[in-house]
Structures are given as C-alpha cells and as structure tokens.
Image 1 (cartoon, one colour):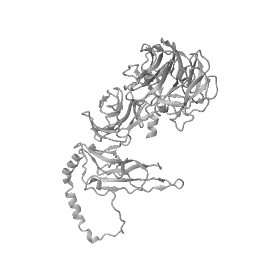
Image 2: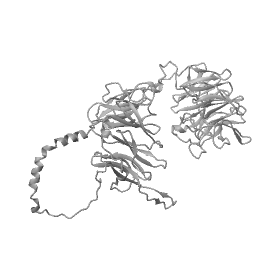
Image 3: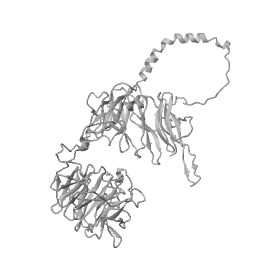
Image 4: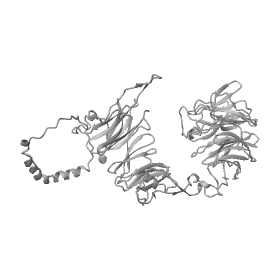
Length: 638
C-alpha cells in the first residue's frame, strides 16, 4: 500500500513558489529580502538571492557584484570603499574573499578547511566582520581552533595575502576594532543565528572591550537580554539589543554607562546592522528592506532598491512532492490517504483515481492531517489565520475550511480524534495537553508536562477516556486517565517505574503500556562503567475488577476419553438451548445500546490489577493494541 501511495504522489503537481517573495509585486518594483548589508558613504552592499549587489543610498537599481552559484554573505567595505571582503561558498567550502567594488574576479584570502556546512542555528565558518582601521587586513571569525562547533575565535588576514593571525581572546562571536585599532569591541558568545526571542539564559550575549596591549578586557554591558552586532564609530559604540522586546539600535560611551535607544520599531526587529566606520550612518535590515540611520539627526529612512534579477524562484513550476511528505493519515476503509507536503494537503488513492490537492494555500502552511472516523472530514493544523490553529474541511475538498480553535494553544500539533469523532486531543509547543469539543469549539486543558517531548496519549474505544503520560520530578513518566463523563484526570501508575506508550485494548477491558522495570546493568570490560539495556516489559492493566487475567496460567494435561454413560443429558440440554434461542432479543437490544456508551473503568484498586505480558524484556517502543494482537517494535541499544 505504501509503495502504491508513493507512486501516486509522483504525479507532477503545480506549486506556486511565490511565498518567499510575497512583498514583491513586479520585476520593476521595490525588492525585498535584502540581507547582511554594509554601508560606505553613498553606497550599500548586500546579499540578495545568494549574490552580492551594490546600490546607492538614494535607492534605485542595484548592480550585481558576484554571480557564482555559491552563496556570498557578510560583505564589508574596506575603509577606502574600493574593496569588499565577504564570506564565499566557492569550491564546496566557506572562505574569506575580497573583490573590487568596480568589479572583477574575487580573490581568496583564507585556505584552512571550513567546518560545515553547519545546521542553520550554528551559522557559518570564516564569517567576515570587517577590516582593520588601516585597511591592511580583514577581520573574520573562524572555528578552526575550537573544541566544539560553538567555540570560535577572531582572526585577521592580510589583504595582500598571508597567514591569518588570531586575536588573543579566549573565544569570541562578533567583533570590531576601535577607530585607532587599539581595542576590540566584541561578544564572547555567538548565537546570532538562533531565533530566540527575548532570551535571558546563559547564552545571552554581553559586550566587552578588549585591549591587546594589556591583554585585559572590561565588560561594557550587563543586561539580562542580548547585545549583539557591535559597532564603533568615533567616540561612540553601537549595538542591537532586545531590551524592550524587539531588537533596536542603541548607542553610548565606550567606557560604559547609560545607553540611548536610537530606533523605535515596534513590529520588526533590527537585523544585521553595520556601521559606516568612516562616517556617521548605520545600515540595517527591517522587514526585508534596508534602512539607514543618520546618527547626528537620529532620523532613519528606508531605501527603495530594485534588484534587476530574473527572479526565477517566483515562477510557478511543476513540483513533485513525494519526497517532501511531512504527515499522513489513512481514510476509514483504507482506499485513500491524505498527505501533507510542501504546505498543502493532498489525498491519493491506493489503486484508482486522481491525486487531489485539497487546500492549494500558497500563502499558508497546512500540516498534520487526520482523517475523521466517519470519513467525512480531514482535520489539520494551518497558519492561514496568521497563527497556527486547528481546522477541518470536507475530505473531497468541496467546501471552505472551518477554523476550530482561536488562540487556545501555542502551536498545536499531534492531533488525535476520538473514535466517535466528537473530541480531538492535541498538544502544543509548551507540552500542554488539550481536548477540543469539536461541535462546541470549546478547548479544555488537561495537563502541563515538565518535559517538552515526553507527552503521549491515546483514546479508549468509544472515546470516553483519554490515557496519557506525564513526567514526574524524578525524570520518570506515569500514566494518567482523563474521563469525559466527569472531566477528572486520575493517575493509574506509580512513581517507581517509567511507564509510557499506553494503548487501550479493542474490547475496552485492558490498557496496555510499556514500562522500564528490568534492571540488570551490564559492566563494560574496558572502562568498567555500568550500562542499562533491554529494560522494558509490556504490561496489561485490567480496567475493571471483574475482568479476567489476560494471560492466565496454562497447564497441559493428559487427554482422557469421554464416558458414554455420562452423555445422556446432552440431548435435553440441546433442546433447552433451542427453546431459549429466541429469548435474546432483549439482550441484543441492550448490547446495541451499550455500543454507544463509553467503556467503564473501575479506578478503585486499578494500579493493583497489572499483569505482565509474557514477552522478555527488550528495547520496546510504539506499542499498539489491535484485534487479537499487540504490535510493537524492538530497537537496538541506546
């Protein structure tokens, strides 16, 4: 089935690629997504679509400076404005290059193998930060001497060529020289590519001033939040900080003291500011545009720049999405399945019929689809309202999507519909568990876990109960059950074991779960350290006191032939059975009514009704109870 669905999704589906350029209206209009700018006099240099471009501070049409398929970033003007240093991804590596502003072939200055390519949160190797004040060398950060990815150092490399020289700092992120070159304004930490808003933890950046002559440093800022992008112009230092909640520009005396807020942007962050170190202006990103702050007047203005690019990424293209699937759910009956891929929802048949794009939402991301038990609707998460909320739409796509939540949770995901389709359980980015009453559109919070990714949950047959796991303060997990009838949650396993992956039996008599209760540490023959492996057993919890043991003791006995003399009453018993065959109507009606009622759970004494499934201890996971079987997987050692 999986291979058939994959083949079905290999149809070439039309996908609009205009989302990254939603601010652009035409080729001749003002361009957005201009990044990593620098300024010198009446010129700005920036990165657009992976290349370097030059433009006037008066705005207008930009001129392309580089064309290589590799990405060019972090361009910095030399003090005389005739040369630009940058980080270039040429020849499969990231190195420091220089190129004349008049044009020409870039010249490579560094040759030590770069570390990477790195995950986005770690940024880049050989990141250019500027020049020495005399213009003889380029200042950059390298990871070559670090013990791990996060540890980098500042270096200078001669403009004319030669070996890089490391600044005598124990570690550094961004940095810049004082105008006389005697001191360095820098941050010991580098977390500029981590999108942590209003962060106040141990990675919050502070700024220091280092004096190479005395090999000493003094702390310049000491706030809870971050100070980044240090700049030094004349007798003033500048930086960006989110002290007010949004990244703004600040300026002050290099000896410390009060710093003055220079920008007042309420919605968008000031990103990647860079100073005209021979002038009195700072350029920065704001909502994809370039802005210039004139320091004497304090006035900031945006630059209307047009990049004469062919903008190939704006074209509508045919795109296969079978290798971009991020979520899936199978329809009742198994004839179709729904997939989330590249921000849209598609349904595909197992054998016959077309693939359907249900949402076609070029300006939104639709994900986490779940097919309803009655087959009528598909529930999913989408940010089409501006925030991620839960929606539903008809399974055939005929009709408008309906929004079911409105700010009730922080980034909902993990949708789980109850078997009767009346309620939907989900969790959010803060590890909180919720239940949505679908028709009433009412959301109830059930639990708040202390571990972000430890929360799992499952519905009982008929949807009357929800079993879920929560973490204890000792690091272990326990199973809880929420009952829809009274709205109460009850803990059903203790504190001494690690219990997780609950799954109700189909008949509603048992709750199966995994538990780490086999502790036989193995000692290593080399380091003499203990290690645990195969700690997990499978258990069954009887949900009512009258439920039989799921795996009663077995005893094979010798076969004994029946005595014919003892069979005389069989005919009479059979006749009585026939006479009462029509008396089950009342029982049948009762059974039919019971099918609509939730299963009954006797919570009194429930933790004492645990039985181990006769399977050896292993590295189990993914436990599911189905008709007549338990499904699970076994993994290798940790």
